[in-house]
Amino acid sequence: MAAQPHELTIVAALCSAIKERNALLEVIKSKDLLLEAYKVQASQKMTEKTLCERAQKKLEKYEEILRDNGLEGVEEVIAKLEYLGEMVKSGAEEA
Image 1: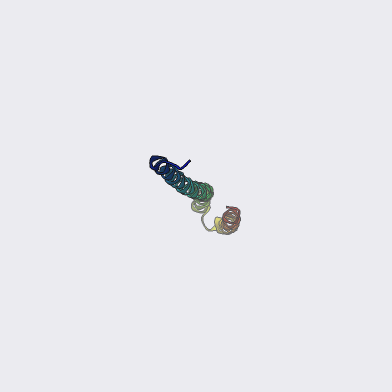
Image 2: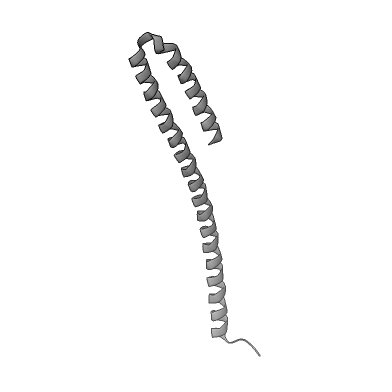
């Protein structure tokens, strides 16, 4: 029994639809991977932002100490700034 022409057309349409669906699934997978990468990047940026905000607050505190203590507080501020620099470096390495 031979297939009717309209049956072949239906089969061809189904094959085409399946191929199109598979192509769309690949696009979706690609977009999902890209979205995950962006989420990781956003998380890293938020961590970096938090570290920078903390560092800024500490820097403001140390600047206030310097203003309050005059030259006597310079060594203390320098030591704390060095510590702060190390903290920022280690935080950036963790992110």
